[in-house]
Length: 87
Ligand SMILES: [Zn+2]
Image (cartoon, rainbow, N blue to C red; front, top):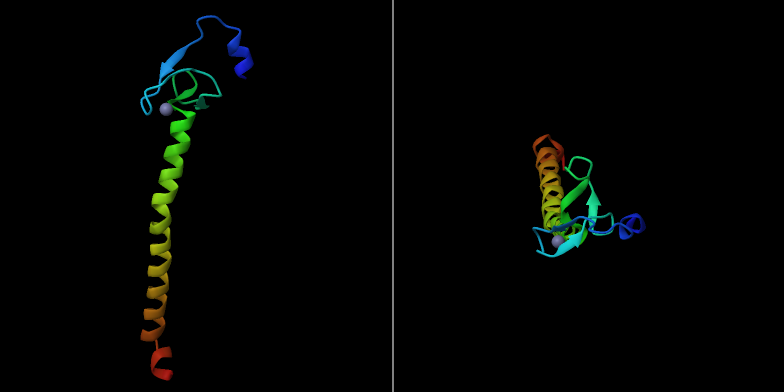
């Protein structure tokens, strides 16, 4: 994909709002997004990957917390429905 662009003089460049680097707009530097005007995401691929990684690590404890809460709910439920008294 980048091969196609590398032959074109004055190929489009764009400054990434994330890292402020000015990069050639192609599939190597930017992720493809058909919803965007020129077919690529506004932030460069590096920033997108970084954001994805951070988002994932931020959500990990949140996911673990939800699982714990579900388990606590279930235990409370069983305790309230007789299993606790029967024991
Ligand atoms: Zn960037």
